[in-house]
Length: 396
Image (tube, rainbow, N blue to C red; front, side, top):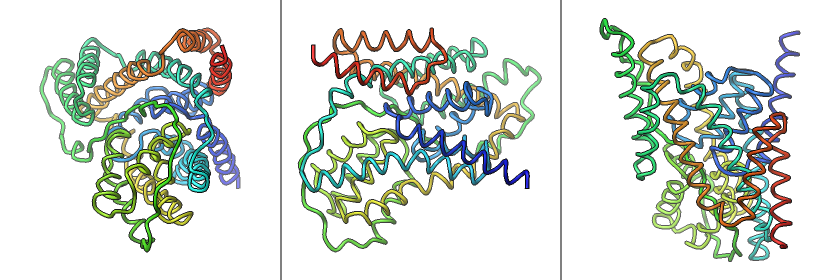
């Protein structure tokens, strides 16, 4: 009985934490992960920061949306498979409900309420949250000078526009051999077979954009619900990369191959995914609604996220075991510092589109000061306060 009560307590905690994060999770995967780290490591102390870093590294190497899979990993760590399901659903549902409501409004009225003044302040706050996460993760991930060089090289390669999946895998393998040679002079005696378990996928910051007026297009007729579900299941199973990659997949499948969507609808769907909280992949809820209404929204969403539950369930139990192998431990260390470097690149990318005038600089600097000086202030209040400040400053 005690075990069941403990499980129920853990599931309630997970539901509360990740539902809240699903509501306030603006800014893309880097920001989401920063908020999760604050909750599950700094505040709740459900796991060590090193293990959280390992989860980030592993998540970068499987298909699917990074932040959603991190929510699932945290849930699995806390309460097994039930915890994985509750945390994942808790994080996904708010975004899909909000996106679904916007999809209905869009189809009915051809536009959405203007949230630009509030988004104006949210982006600088998100920037401050990610900077804090990079600082904390960097202190844990930077174990020696070799990892420092690897991290710097990953940043340069990422800024140069190289594929992040190739960057992480290449420097993960390079770091694995380099660290083993440096720290184990006697030779290489362990098997490389566990590396066959790994595949590649980068995390990426959702590109921040300004909400614009949306215009409706036609809704495809006579679409098979089963076929729609299978299309999004396929996309969710093979999607590697950022929101830009999702756009390419959706364009190829839904416009070029099937003709279910117009170009304008796709652009509007990605826009909605960008300025609503939660994963950008929630844009598929909007897409499904435009194709065949509420049933399409539900099936597109389920198809998109279902593979992530499977991948996390398969991978999570292996992560602690990877730390018992010198080879894979060095590989994880190299991938982890690479993941932190990519988060640092996300800071640069977000700063370019967020810090556009003195008002946004002011919000960003105050947010950084609040987060670093008043360490107990929750990111929720930083986001809410900055959104209100952004609105007020637009009136000046």
